[in-house]
Length: 359
Ligand code: UD1
Ligand code: UDP
Image (cartoon, rainbow, N blue to C red; front, side, top):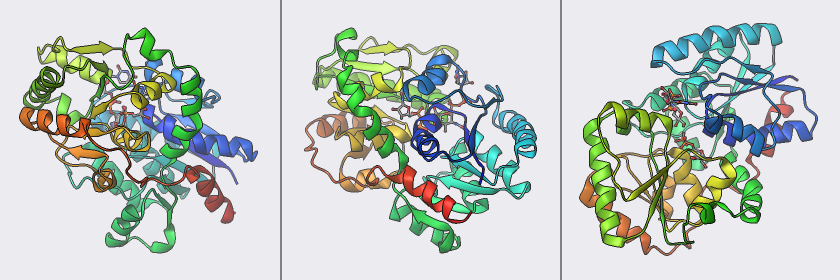
């Protein structure tokens, strides 16, 4: 059996790392194909280094572009690699353009597709990610659902239950594998002059928020209100997309926000674990906040991680300034004894076992 692991962006590297490590540990034949959708060192290279992963065998250096241009260029180049390498299975993770392009290329070459984190839905087709997830789930051969809820959704959409396996989310594996290292190296707070459990951590990069002047200004207003109210510093490792859009839309980041470059996974886990509150529109952060027992507010109108709302670790607040302030204040006082909806940290092992079983 020969496995091709495809990655393209920061979260894919994090969430595929437990699977790659398991393939290495079991000495299974595999290679990593990186589309290069993310390419800045602090969005890409640093993750391979910190997670102890080898350089990918292929880096297609696709870079940025419009939805169609980026996806199209990936499709052409991924097909070339797959025709040369002839893997038996292609594993993709999540909902990026990389995932869509790799799945389409593999499916048309009759190579089996395994979709890690299958079946999650925001039910908002305005998001490029929602279209990617739906399309990929419907052409996949193995659907690795992170939760029972995701499995139910796939069955509702008519997918054969025999193809679905509930594995938990590999993000739990990644957090558990790296949090001890993060705790040992705990220097991030000192360097940023932050005090444990006395600051808020902000990230945002979703297209529907940061490419929209009205929504982005509204979020910034809400964060300013919350800061005035609770008087805690806010640290913001800013995604390059967000900085680009703030400048293009001629907006200004409020002074209460301490903006820094994106940081590597180990430093970021320290910032997450020690924060009083996480404010985000990221998918991965909603999960990691829940795992690390840090309350979270999500700056979106919908979420494909409803389990976080159900257990009470997350509040969906949208972009209304008053609601950001109200729920931010409320979540800061939240008791953090919620349950863990994303599995036991053995998702990577289960996924490898499932594909090995068929060969
Ligand atoms: C992509 C994914 C999104 C995921 C996010 C993770 C899609 C449709 N979107 O969004 O689902 O949550 O990655 O972070 O696949 N840029 C850089 N350096 C980089 C990467 C990007 O400067 O290494 C800048 C460029 O200006 C680029 C912009 O960020 O145009 C957006 O990058 P892109 O990969 O298209 O989308 P993301 O917003 O990162
Ligand atoms: N992350 C990081 N450094 C940062 C911001 C995020 O290491 O400065 C990690 C975070 O811990 C999580 C992943 O990147 O594992 C989330 O990526 P992102 O928010 O870009 O994408 P999404 O999860 O929304 O697809």
